[in-house]
Length: 424
Image (cartoon, rainbow, N blue to C red; front, side, top):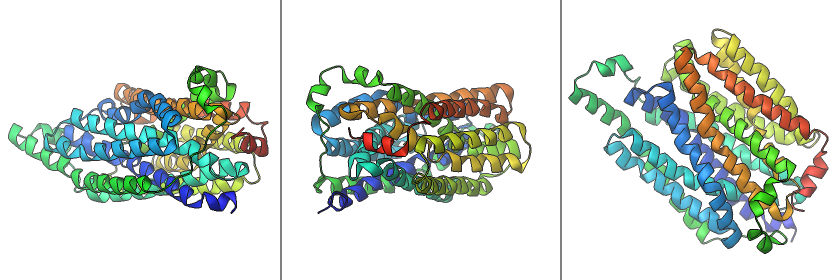
């Protein structure tokens, strides 16, 4: 039996996880717009949804790596799925108590599960199968994350947004009793989708529990656990650069996707019912970009393709900042195509050559996803201060410049060397 056939079912199961966390992440733009309207939030307050989600990556990434070191990838996946489901179920009491902080807490618990899943699944998919196809395999798995990004805004818009919500002024004009009734009705719309998703995740957890998965052991893994492995991994130039690049990239990605509907409303006065189709298109382009990028990586070194994509994304960002009318929304949506390969490519290049440090390097790069908790509030604060959401994308432009520098520093590494050294 070839190595590829031996790992086929395991790869299918792991790839399904990319879809599920992609789906839940891409419900966040719908959730932000919905909760912003329901609770009459400022841009900064609404961005705390992203902060609650991505701060979990800072606190849980290293514990996730330790779980995998001690108990293996499968144990990490089961723990992650359990927290994922629990967070979904917590949306029920959050809606019943009409408490915005409760929603943020539920999102944090859910995201603790996602942190563990991503810390396990990203390196696991790279070491399952032919080492020469590791980067392509990760990008292919991440393509299903893109499929979720296409489906989630459309389904979320249908199930959660409902009728066009009242404006903040309209809500403020209501009596206290009417205001509470309105908020209760709006928050109740999130219960059904998250309840169903919670049960689906529990089913997936049971499937993983009863399935025998191959446990990949890196050389000298046992000694690494007790030898200051995280600091040793961080001393590697590619790992440290990967941490920085991933921090800024994730911050840009989360802000672009999470505030796309808000941008359409603020800059173009577009209703949520209309703008959700642009969010769906953005998800589709993100997915398409992953598949196209995976194809081109057969012929172009990943770092060089990343270099090209970061340049184009930065140019489109300048259009969003300086343009006017629908061209700005088109540029914002088009940007998602060129962001598509950034996460998996930065990740694969960052852990390249890590060998026995692979799990710890993975934890550090996943930990840097905390950029999604920091960059959106910073950009949103610029919007609140300037009353111009377009200016907030200056922060996104800086993020793409950092990705460009990461790609430039790795531009001379050929695709064969990147892929062959991932498991050394």
